Length: 250
View (cartoon, rainbow, N blue to C red):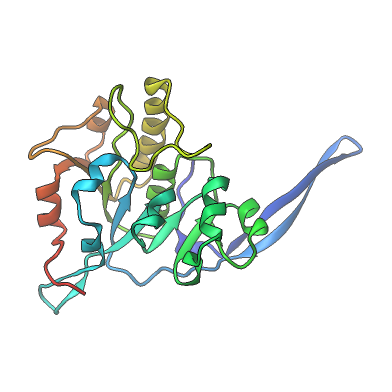
């Protein structure tokens, strides 16, 4: 993983095919222009995962405004994952799962909402989706977090990013075919998520990350989070207060 900002991103050449000629690797590609400009924001973002803890929050607060000097302003932009589109329209939805993308494409969601995905899904459903800039293989939550950082947000709240623990329901949405299969090895899943998140925390060390958890005074779920001064764990009441959610309805 590497650090980048979408303000500097103009597009990219995405490989179509790879073949060999005279012992040399040749790659043919297609240039895809940057399709979303997101430079005008207040530097605050809410990354919404689909862990069950987020059910305790009314997500419509994220469409609200807060008051203060200079008058009302947005509480920030929101970055959602996968099936969230069924219940809430974030500012940006990130989905690279082909089965979920197919479900989204069957609806009119893309007519008024922005969905980032991979080139493969864009080709399959032309005119509906936007290319995720500088895509690298990541879990949905870390992918949404990385994009929020790349868009230049300096204060980011992570909601519904619960990780995986035995005996606890893993996802808001029920298993559906190949979607949200039960996690057989919780330790393996958490190791992957931790590695990806910690890389993002380290790369974007000028960003304040708030891991929103259940409880009044939560501590870090993992010792790895203690390595980073820019990562804090807060409860839902603290989150609502700090982010000034629900102060003024839009």
